[in-house]
Length: 372
Image 1 (cartoon, rainbow, N blue to C red):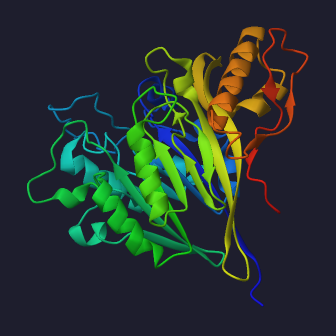
Image 2 (cartoon, helix red, strand yellow):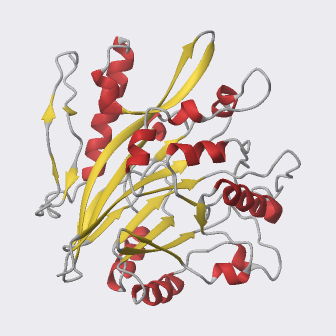
């Protein structure tokens, strides 16, 4: 009899490292250290067998040239972020998003070289046609994972003539074709899509259509990014799960919206029994980006909200703010279809420190009813 095999996958949303986040990481000698940014969450990220996130910036280097014809801002970050992400626990970064071409093809290719140098796998943008034709496949603890990833746009920046393979662009026909091919090769198919509308807390009709097609043709897990805020999580049947938007894992406050600094560490337990049947369990750890002054300078960190609320170092206003963010995350992740999908949120309680009626999940855990 083949023993039960199991892996733990952690997924987060957008890594949007810009402006004061970069300034806070700059040291007196001009170098950068991003390790403090991830210190409160690195244990959780490293605990997983495989951790993935969306790199919503580039490593274009000091000589990088931003593209003029862009529908949005252009992002680049010091190379020091890459080894910090590796040390924090990231095994894989999604590079197909609307900012991947911010510094043109040269910036895109240099980003891949920096990730390669740090030993971080990547998918969604490619250095060659041959590389673009090979889906990412990894065998972990006896379970074979396959990953597909696409972006709906590149902010209007055109790809170089003859090189459409640089970026995986999202199309429904391609989704169906690719997932069918990958389904035959792996135990679990994961699709990580950069789609949806920015600052929308609910998925669009297009998002839902993409997810339906993916599930129909063999995908098991669909992860989303781009809206910059959380969107619901739901099961479809016994083994399929969608997280329409994982929110921002790292970001400054966008559009003066505090929810753009809220994300989630989605921890998926994937189990294959002796008959080859796959089961998926899920746990959510809501996170928030906080900035404080320490020793005469600012320090920015990604913190697990529930753990932070247990501490004693918060002011009353900080505690109330984080309580609201946690309550918002809980409501959004469950979504309006929670009852239909039998998802449950366990451990609801209200700490005595909170006097304004905000209910806080003691253990924010979305779980599919299962034997494990």
